[in-house]
Length: 303
Image (cartoon, rainbow, N blue to C red; front, side):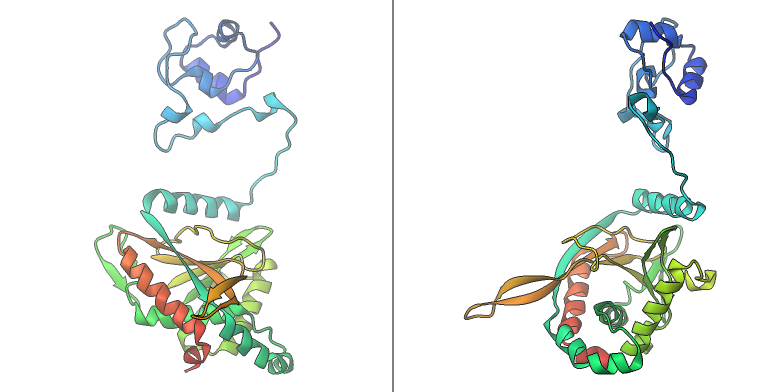
């Protein structure tokens, strides 16, 4: 039999378990040995598997994922940036520790689109692109004022709810070096033009890696928008210590019954993920109902 193909970590683990990796390969009639072939228990001294599999890996133990992918075909490697590694650890911890639920709804965008069209000339004169996202940020800020439990955080031990007397909205930006979430401070006290300008500024500086550390934390809640890319729904991961996150996907034209006939209506899917330790389904339904009402009547968020 040719030399056994096994990654260094597999060989190390086999040695620790007292497994003769060459004999194991012969017994299995294999040329490639992975962590899964070593089993999850101590060696019997025979080199045979002793039970266990990747599914039986202890919580937090990722050694079973250490596979020599090159054994199955050509591969290349690409290091993850330090920023992306930190974000990955935070997201993994959040998804593991937070009992998260996602509530799905839709917002009628007819009034927003008509309002944006009426302001097109003024937007050009100001040199500001008035996007639908600016309306979502403003509507979310107003809704957070009406639902203070969403504008809160849990203490680290989960015993105290910390209610905030400010509304800061994080806006997720996809960049070549990883996802960044700069924050619009006091969004409830800013007008649409100011919010639109700030979104554009933060997004541009995030792409250029010019966001300052003090522009990245303290959000009441974040928005992750895929509207410019596509999709019909997704489940955004809550970004602790926030208690909820709003996902937005592509606006689509759908038929809506107006009582007499169907009419084409631009509808935007909204995906609200929330921490079930502090918020429940009824809270989420009421929250999105208020949010969609504000979006359907954008003049109300101008006051």
